[in-house]
Image (tube, rainbow, N blue to C red; front, side, top):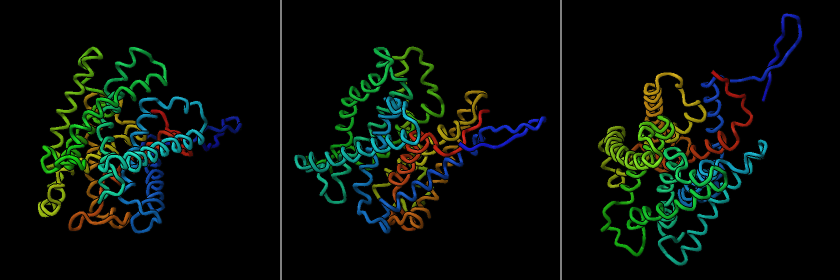
Length: 381
């Protein structure tokens, strides 16, 4: 942390830590995260410049598992054990652990389990084997994030409030319901041993719809501080209300955002994209998720301290507006000119679920794991 000098009337020089206002702190973090994301993209991922041939798979599979590992370590386990370490070693260790988990799970599913079940095989055309394993993460985002931001760790918190047992209980016990949802919604459209043509929801539709449910979890968990679900009363009723409510809100978001994305990209491009257009609520949704996470953690979740509903409304509107602007800038310029991603339709390039999740991961790494290491502190007030 840097310091600035001041002088008392009597001439005595004092030093005080240099700080940034909340908006300056947020902008500084955004600059650092963007530089880290772009630089690491060029080194590891870029389809034109990187020496590694991992775009789009297995890059996206490992990326999704890294995000879920970050949720396990940071949300469910609340950085237990790592919180005793000083920076930058805490951040370095967390990044190493999270990255190791993501690579290990990706390899085990695509190479080891893929040798038993060809649905997960790394050699399936178009990276479909990697996608089959990584789709679990979509449903894990719902179960593992909502257990923290909507349920406040209940019912595990009734048994213990101590980590790591609190987090390990959530991680282990939520695997079963997450697997059930994954098996019902994702696997029928991806496996080699089912008739994918007969599935009731395509993979694109499942992605677009269920990601919208995840968006609802983050809106209510971060921006509106678990309102309105917290009004239900007892912890059990809050859990039930949040599950039903987030699915309902997410479903409404799916249909509304689908119409909006088709409007944003135009009818001709929507027709050109074809059946995959049903995934585009997730493409805009991931832009919104990035801004919600960034706003809550780097921009201090402003405004705050006023009328609660007004504060919530402003947060929702500001982050959604930033998401729409990001979606347009990414697909109609940034993805081609900066990231060298292939075309998805005439004049459109990229896959926001790759790049924007990369930005989310670097946000979690720098802002949470490294605690914005190297930047002046955020000024209170």
